[in-house]
Length: 301
Image (cartoon, rainbow, N blue to C red; front, top):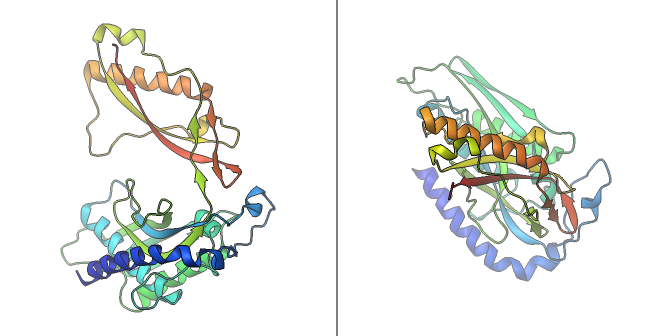
């Protein structure tokens, strides 16, 4: 409970920081110390209109994990967040600035920290990083995890827990521009630092066609919603290999005629997506890939 109270206080402090940021924005706007290995459009993005965001870390736990194991992963991630703030020299329960050690690109390109734990042995940490990620951000996340474990704030196995192993990952996420709350579908996330980020524009659908209502299900008179996740590339095209159905894990699958209708709806979306046209997402003036999650509603009327 003490940790949760501390996090609540940090969020309040972060709100005060956001109110004060406009006055120091000009002085800090030149900070972006990531060292990209390949020159790209993002290297030229202006920070003149940069705005603060809050960087969070959160546990990525398999859906098959039981609630107690999920709680253990969240509790350890909360400890890692505290030690990461210490490494960034936080003072007076306020969130430290990521700059100059970690710039906005360091957070966006950050890999994840894989954690393998067992009741009989100390956890093993492995960085799963892309070739473009910020090595400083990686190093600090790994150091914070090891510090939490070494200082007695590691993964705790209760006597009533029947499982003997736990595998999960810890990743970064950024709050929307100008907000301190992360939002979205994150189960539990913990604030670690602030970072200045250039303006971002999400991908925008600009096509004129839409998925069609399947004639094969017309006699059923069925309605339904299909949720899919896909990546829109810098040319505004959907990458077919990235399309994934998103079915809520807590919702049972339909059966009978409803399953027939839903399958037809899903196939209609899958067939249409490669033909869809988007205006690509942008960071500053640079087009970038973006992962999109979109619901499609089917109604025979």
